[in-house]
Length: 158
Image 1 (tube, one colour):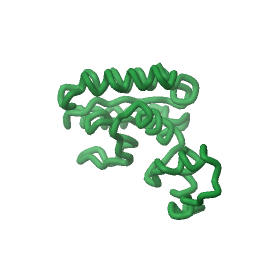
Image 2 (cartoon, one colour; image 1 turned 60 degrees about the horizontal axis):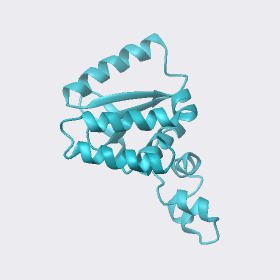
Image 3 (tube, helix red, strand yellow; image 1 turned 90 degrees about the vertical axis):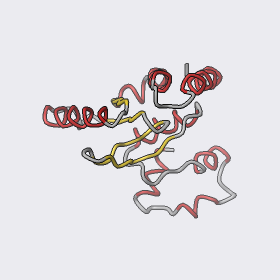
Image 4 (cartoon, rainbow, N blue to C red; image 1 turned 180 degrees about the horizontal axis):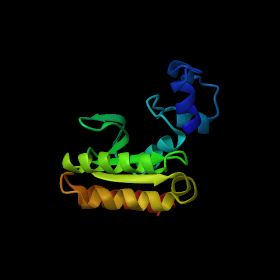
């Protein structure tokens, strides 16, 4: 998924070229959920994990006073997926300011690092579910979270 997102974003391949019937079924399945707005492989992986457990997501959402965020889950949970280059003091201070502004907008903000996304996807899934379950602005958050947990268990992501 991350590779296909990147290829479409960079213009290496067009979305229309992905509908080729001769592709292996596993590759065809991944192309159904391509999002050319995704700016990193980590973001694509988190988006796919959220999608697999049934959450609605939107990539690269603009917020006033903040700019773009990587991903929004169920309209209120903001997810930032940060690689190794995003952990110096200046970036951390800027992130803290952005997080405060996003909380002011009513959002819950989650940051996932490379190691978490790649090596501990179960933690990422559990955290997403907990954030959705506890957010008061998400209509039917409890039932959405329970359904996501059942899907995660079925997919061995719990």
